[in-house]
Length: 179
Image 1 (tube, rainbow, N blue to C red):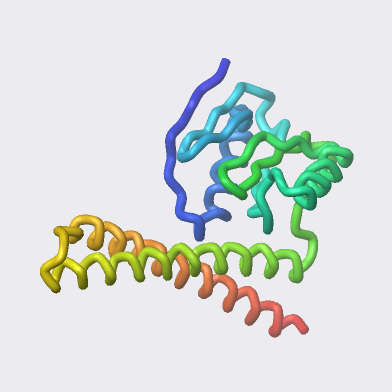
Image 2 (image 1 turned 60 degrees about the vertical axis):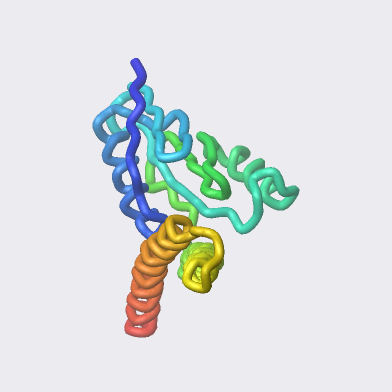
């Protein structure tokens, strides 16, 4: 038996998304495919699989990424699918937890990749929004709707960027506390 669920998570909520996917697996619904805002599940033994996600530095089709994904497959980790550079993995539970990030350095690298991606998209939307609205104000074509859409997207991305920076700062503080 299979089922499909459409659900939205912000990029900055990757940890909540992963928790939700693992809760589904605990209920016997293991992730078997992904699409944009779409998750495909198949029935399995409750808790049989553990799910992890990772934002790759380069496209999944890049040589470095293909080598990395091949290495993971050699260790028994199954690539379920990807959405842009986000890759979804699963592994059967055979003992301990399945972790992709085993040290603080790799966790910070992942967070920095998310922050960099959000920053680029935020700046693009903010720039396009301001540009569209300023052209409209000076009597140009009516780009107001596009401009407001870009500014709304920039606001949402800015919120996500702020949340990611807070998560990173908290993790750094925790790290400093234990050093």
